[in-house]
Image (tube, rainbow over all chains, first blue to last red; front, top):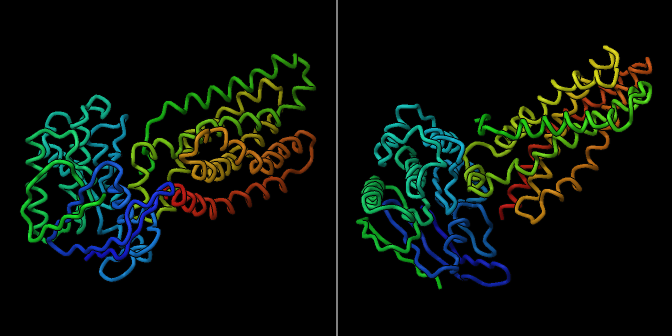
Length: 204
Length: 209
């Protein structure tokens, strides 16, 4: 369970949010809404432990994520704004490296399968620089098909995706939630994902 | 995980080194004694600058495309990943210089012995450059004009390595013992091998806040 208590975020002398409290349990989805610049990405980065909250604390199964460190990171998958795709590597190399960084041994076949599932059949060995924006996004999302983490934090995962890809991701998220996973995501698009419980958090 | 990139940077670094080193004989003139005297210094300074050339890119590309965030939240210890980056930086920008140095040294009419000492001193010295340089690169991440700042930050720290590296070659050319220089360089290498990854990892965390 991920719990946030009394979070406050200050960016450039500006208070983005204060006294933020929420918790996400197994099988639950937390969707964060808010206009541009309302601190959605800042909040997600905080939840990943990339930035320190100005006040308040974030706990994972009742221990502070700061003290958990790598133990927390091994149960977390974060897909940020910047998708971490290298132009000079092929789709499959990108996927294998991002999995390796996440501490996951992936053989060629698993990676190929994941890319095909996400709709990149026949593009596995193309350099990422020749892929379109949506295809690059798909490469980064392919990691979700392979990881075995409990908590997914997704920052605008649906940007640049077409309708079929959005449907695919939606199904994948529903499957993951049904398995007892936790998802925190921001999106401007309306998607109806069925989950045990869906929380909405509005920042403004 | 070490071979995280294919770099055309290798060639840039290498050619920079070759050109700078080759310019000196052309500028100074073909006076053998002078050339022989300045050779260790010139080769070492050129190596310093060449290895610094690619420092700015060490973390900044990863910072820009988001890979760095993934590095920071990777379940493997960050200092090991950073050490991997340092080793790969050395492989692409240090090792080629070491291999090239003896050939360039011939231009300066260095003796066989001096050439081998030069190569060995670069072999011990250039990893230290990558290790210390990475700390600077991590600290200046996301800062405007970071490239210049790295040089100002890191070059003073390179001074001891320059002194003992070039000193070893001079000592051997003068027929003196150079064991002490090598011991000190080796000591620098060990110390920076222990502390640099840790320091660079901490700097990365700070830069990403």
